[in-house]
Length: 105
Image (cartoon, rainbow, N blue to C red):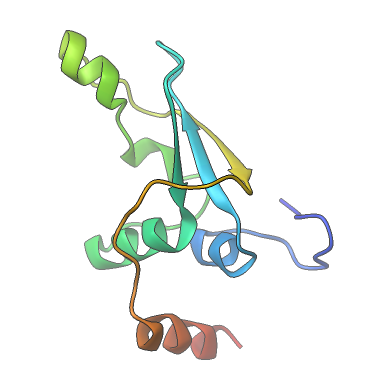
């Protein structure tokens, strides 16, 4: 996947965060959507040891509305890259973010 203005392909969560994009997840069942900060999602995946490749990310998310209302775990929401405001989540420290940037050079 390519982002406008970038000559490099975006393949994982860190790339999305480095380009200052956020992630919009939309439930396929009820239509509920949520925007999350890509760097915060990357940090969560890194701490859990999960694969941060964009094709693998949606399978780790469950619709909170469907779960609370019907006790259904609706996995694999639609995911889009957006520039919209995001919900507050814990971000990685500046040190961790820079270490990852150095590692990727």
